Each structure stands twice: as structure tokens, then as C-alpha cells.
Length: 554
Image (cartoon, rainbow, N blue to C red):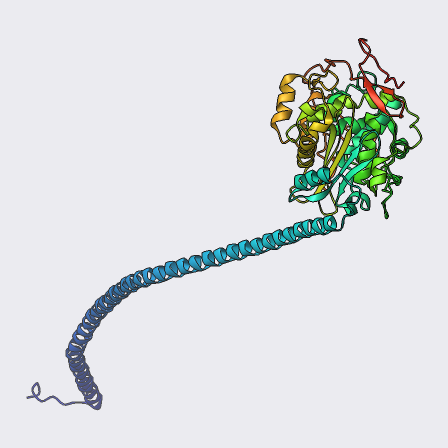
């Protein structure tokens, strides 16, 4: 009993109570842990499942996002592709539009250029038309003035047959004609007397006659026709015949302008001839002008056709200067008496040496196509620009062995040249041929060029203006003409005789090569005269000498 129901002390009771409580608490805690364990396991599983789900969802979300991104990229790529295609299409359209616009702009620019070209062409055509009209008006003015002047001419005392021949020969040319007896000064006719007596013209290359006479007398030109102290390969005869500017510029530069003016006055230029007609123009001389062109082109000179007639008559007469006279009545015509200026104080040989070149101008030089040289014509052409137009001149005498007539022609107009003036004179000489009494077999009027045949042929084939052939003739020279104010050592190319063309700048070397040796083939022409009881000169046969140099006036 005791064993089954022992007596408990308080301590034991407390202990038992404590143990019971402890056990209860422990059991409760264990139960709680088990409950907690049971409870935690589903939660953990749930959390694990949730985590898995979350991961899965995350993967799904990522996959979805990736898919969406991929889709977006695909869409974007597709869009880009579409945009690109659209851009290409747009670009193509824009390119087509640009090309179309460019073509349109090019067409517009081309049209503008075409219109500009047409406008410029129209402008130039208009300028050319105005210039042509101005020239035509100027030409018409010259022709009208010529016709009006001819209608006003005083024809009393003139040889009407000669006048008719001169008027017909002048034809449609604007100009003037003087026909005078070379040894007496009797004027047979002056067509367009206002230009022939009262107007001055630039002498152009006819001034070379003065330069030649001065050069001979001052010994600048030797007896062979060469320039002393120069190796210029052309001689006087061909220099006159071909109107070589360089030759006469060289001669003139050695003379100087002062002597040139002095000789021009001696030969009747720059002063009235003394004709019995009112209002005679005295002419003009180039005082103070040192330009080399005064010796070859006649710059700053002005002469009348009547003065040129006196000049060529003096050359053919051995220096005897006549005073032109117009017989006003039949009595004066029947009882005409010659008048002369004092004898020119120059050797007759100086004038005689000029004749072969003047004959050569008619036979093979600048006047050869205008005149019939078989009539014994000797002359000098001239072509230059003055007073706004070309001037053509021809001063001549015939027959050269016994000069009877001096014929001087001056024409003006854009198409005029010395060769055309010579052609007018040639027609007059054809009418005068029965009066000339020229012996075509005479040796006096027969000359030959001293240049080689090849050079002469070349000069003959070119334009026969004295200005143009002057350039060609330079082929026979070693030196070229000097320039204004320069020494004779400074040389340049030969100038054509045209007033507007400036002289080239001087150079210090020879530009023209010698093409051949030029020696005289025949001796100079010598004409001998004998004075008869009436004081007139008649020709005698020249003495038989190899190279006679002096004209004998008995």
C-alpha cells in the first residue's frame, strides 16, 4: 500500500508538480514543434512552389519579354525593311523627280543660253547692220559729193574729149582726176575740181618719190640703188615698184625729218602750185614729226592731186617744175605759154634714177594690173587710211621716153586702193594712146626686176596693193625698217601701209633672212632732151655708154 500510495512530502509534491508542469510544457512544446513543423512544411513547400512558380513565371516572363522583344525587333526590322523599301520607293520617286527637275533645269539653262546667244547674235548683227549702214551712208555721201562737185566744175578751156574719158574712167568711184601736159603745165581737165585743187589728201606711198630723190641727192642711196651703210637687200628700183616701206623708212631715218621737209618743199609740196583757179589748198608738211612713217606712208603730209601732177612731171622733166594753168578761152588755148618755177637745184641724175622704179610699178609692180605698160607709163601707187576711209592714189606720166601727160587719180572709199586708182588712170591712157606717140620697142621704157624670179613671183601672186606687197618684198632684205624715234640699229618687221595699225615694238635682232643676191640686171634709164626754138624739150637717143649717170639737157 505504501508502495502504491506513498506519502508525499511538500518537496516531493513541488517536485512532482514541477516535473508535471515541465513535462506538460515539454509536451506542449514538442506538440507545438510538431505542429509548427507540420505547419512549416506546407509553407516551405508553398514557398518553394511559389519560388518555382516565380522562377517559372520569371522565365516565362523573360521568354515572353524576349518573345515580345523578338517580335518587336521583328516588327521593327519589318518596319525598317518596309521603311527602307518605302525609302527606296520614295528615293526612286525623289530621284526621278530630281532627275526630271535637273533635266528641266538643264533645258531651261540651255534655252537661256540659246536665247543669250541669239540675243548676242542679234546685237552683233544690229551693230554690223548699223556699221554697214553707216559705211554705206558714208560711201553714198562721198559719191554724192563727187557728183555734186563734178556738176559744179568749170569746164571752160578744158579738153572735153579728155574730160569725158576721165569722167567715164572714174565711173562709180568717189574721187578726182587731174590730166596735165607734163612738160608745159597745161591742164587738160580736172574732174571734181573741189577735191583736185581745194582739198588735201594724205599722199600715202606716193611720198616715197620725195624720199627717193632726197636719198639720192644726200648719197644715202648709192648709184646702184643700195642704201649706203646698210645690207638691206632690196634696191631702189624694186623698192619703188613694190612700194617697200622698210626701204624708205631706212633711207628716211638716215635723212632725218628736217631734210625730208626741205626736199618736199623743193619739190612743190606744202605750197600752192600757182594755178589760175581760186581757193587752192597749199598742203601740209610734217614739221617736228620724227616718225619713220613720214618717209613711207606720208603721215602728217597733205597734198593735192595737182601737186602730185607737178611732182611726177618734175621727176620726168629732170627737175623742171611747171606751173599748172587752165586756159580759160580759145585764145589762151591756142596761144598757151608754159610757166615754170625756178629750176630745182638738184642734179638731173637724181630724178633720172627714180624712173626705172616707176616704170617697174607699171610693168611688174603695184600698178601692173591696172595699166597697159606697153604705153610707156611710169607711176607710183599709194594706199592708206585717212579721214575715215581708204585712199587710193596713182601719180603717173607717159610716155616715159618723152613725157606728154601727167595723170593723177585719187579715190576714196572702203574698197579703194592704189591699184584701183591705177586702173582708172589706165583707162584714160587707153583713150590718150593715139596722142602718146610711144614707141613700144623703145629700150628706155623697158626694165626688169632685180629680185630673184621666185621672190618676184611670190610678190606678184599676192594682193597687189602697195601696202600688202611691201610686206612681201621684205623677203629680199636683211634688215627691217626702223621705228619712231629709234636709231637705225633698232629694227622690226615691215609694216603694211595702213594708218590704224601701230608700229611693232623694236627688237634687237634681224627678223628677215636674205633669200638671194639682188644685183641690177640693166643699167638705169637715161633720157636726154634737147631744147628747141620754142623752148620745148624733145627727146634724143641716149649716148652709148655702159652706165651713164647724168641726164644731159642741151
